Length: 171
Image (tube, rainbow, N blue to C red):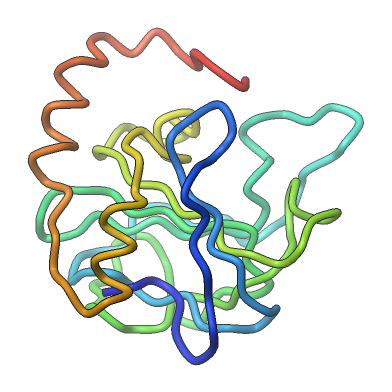
């Protein structure tokens, strides 16, 4: 399911330095679970500081879901997170997770949802969580009502990535 609902949203067809998409929409649009799954990580405090620009803090308010398909879906720069959304909570496709916004490093940009697709990792592996597989073709499919799955591409990308030696780009 397309991860922004309740208003017009346009997904970028490219992203800087690592695979992800910025889905531009006004502040307050719904960020919804793209698949059935369970909440993996939630960041409810925006601790990004432009003076340090720590990669782990760039997302501001964020939620990630590990789908029943084994893929992690990540959304950040949220203005709010829905009540009851916490690690381990089961969610259904289309269920609200939060609201689009401008937190983290998006403070000086138009409002958007940063959307990343990756494989599940241990806690705080932000360099994988932020996006490891280009999501554009999947977002385009879902926006048109299609059901293109990223499972095979995520598995191939994980094999190609190899051992996790930490952040490799835009750290």
